Amino acid sequence: DGGITQSPKYLFRKEGQNVTLSCEQNLNHDAMYWYRQDPGQGLRLIYYSQIVNDFQKGDIAEGYSVSREKKESFPLTVTSAQKNPTAFYLCASSMGAWDRAATGELFFGEGSRLTVL
Amino acid sequence: AQSVAQPEDQVNVAEGNPLTVKCTYSVSGNPYLFWYVQYPNRGLQFLLKYITGDNLVKGSYGFEAEFNKSQTSFHLKKPSALVSDSALYFCAVRDRIYNNDMRFGAGTRLTVKP
Image (cartoon, rainbow over all chains, first blue to last red; front, side, top):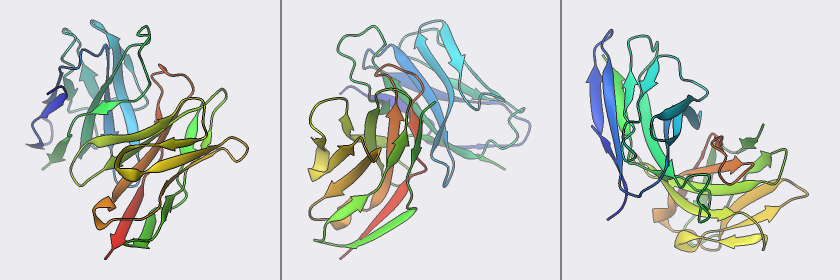
């Protein structure tokens, strides 16, 4: 079945440590996204990538880093510079801007919950 | 820039009654509107979208939404609520179909009581 796989589902981190969240998709989508979800705040965009080897900052990129070395993979690193990293992180993908079949909706993974101890 | 407002944090309905989850939007161009549902500790699932055409859009699980351009609204509706509809619902908007800037509302928690 096609979809987006995020791992790990739960992650605990000590202050000062970097952690990397994995996101893999087999939908053959060009665009991928990382969102952060906090209670009562909806979803906020961290980073997005429209194509391999290219990515752009979203609204809250400080303290995060990403890479896009393969079309199917878009890992997110939460660095020690992120002051309040405890949150639910969601990865999503969509068809690219140049795809005539694009219909606009995002497809989401199951999320990764990060807790800083 | 586009934005979305979901004026109700919480909506409570009895099973079998109709439900409405409200959404209003602000966008400079033509809106592309979406509804998603989220169950506890899960990702978001796509329910339905409005791109163009008929103002009444039908989606998954018996949900529908009505696009009202004059009121800049896109309310989610279902004629008869189920207990299993209890979840967190998000409205989202983008001003182009492939614009990376999709904006989400804060979410509305729907509780359906037996």
